[in-house]
Image (cartoon, rainbow over all chains, first blue to last red; front, side, top):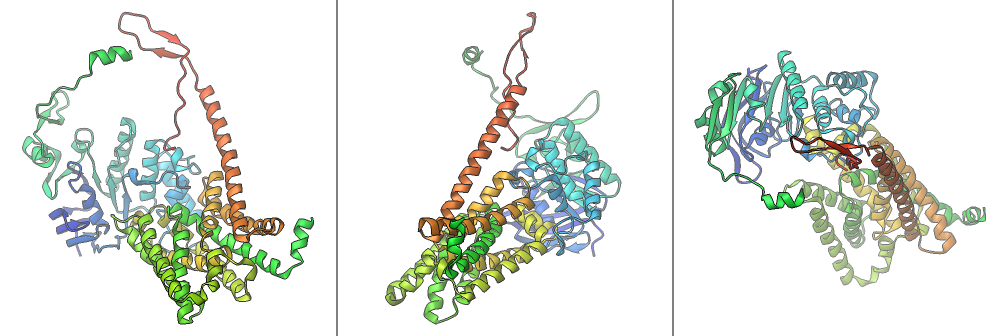
Length: 273
Length: 310
């Protein structure tokens, strides 16, 4: 039995013969809020999927909620919010249908929800500001509302561990803040949260614990410890620099490389105007 | 009234009517899952695959339903398995598995020419030559499929919507897929003698595609598709009798006509709604001007916001 909420011991993960992640060891204590950062293709999503038993080839040991995770058998008590990019938006499901998927999928039950299940769904929708949207088709929601609907599906069974793959991608600033506040609130109530993000300054810099991923674990710790030029450059395979905002004291990560300046052809602009 | 009462005088027609209605309902129900899994041509492919099994069953002197059913089940399992691989899509898996099986059937026929005629029913359907055993098999498969859909409604919905995430939430998707493959094979086997290998895809695809045009609800789509499939099967039989054309073809053509009509009506309705939305959203807008000059307004038409994901 592991005392960690999530424990990965020297895992190597692959979809075919080429490993995406090599020799990764990661411990996430219960109640921690962890952000995974790294460039595209670094293996962040694979790391999350390995925690859920969704990667076909994993060498090493994965424990979630104290139980060993084996391929094709996802651990119980975990809520998962995948990237919404893979959703079939033309599928005939309502918001209520989507959220209902998060409960009572394990046993043979009647097709229609019980009163208690409907109550659970309405409660979580209300918490996420989606009350009144139950019978709306998922395609008819805005990007932020769609993200929240899938978050509601993950939360409806009241999981101990919440795993999210880029929950703040493609949403506006206010929705991003709403989602982060909600996750922070859940974390305060004891839920372990692990999420990936590409937003270093607006999201990762505010998380209590950050893991830098690029084919393996490059570094981990609080943002003050890992947000430095050396670690960021190593993680993102690019020259990066970290500056501190004079007013707020916040750390800001920026590219330091010299780029050819981007500009529009003035004649073209004049011809369009 | 004679159009309805005249053909009912014949027992062969009454039997045909009953099986066409049952097969229509069965294909309509299974079709919802098939269409939403984007495997529309699995019906077409699997019926060809089962044809290979039917030939082997005939050669080995097995019961048609057992031989063809097992063959179809194995084909559906292989297709499901192969299509889960990242680099083989469902369409390619269907194409490879089913054409190979069909080719095997054709190869065996070409060596054993004497039974070619007996398999005409499998290829083109023989709705008026159904036996009592056929009727019982169709009724049994329909009952089992309806029962399965009722009991595993949520698991089937989740697995169809997103099989990978369904697994994360505890749905045994492998079992659901295996059950689905079994039901699909059974549907194709009992339907192919009625509508024929060549027309079964339409019987499976047309009712759910029509239902999808009129509803955004999964539950309603299941009910509408099943009832519509039954109606098309039933009404198609009368069309077949009245126009003296092959029953399978009459059923498929009627279904296609209904789909086309619904497509046109719903398309016109959407177009009209879109036009109204544009009219409502036509408002004066403030045009950006460089600093120092006064902003001016003019009657600019704001393009209607496209429905997200449409």
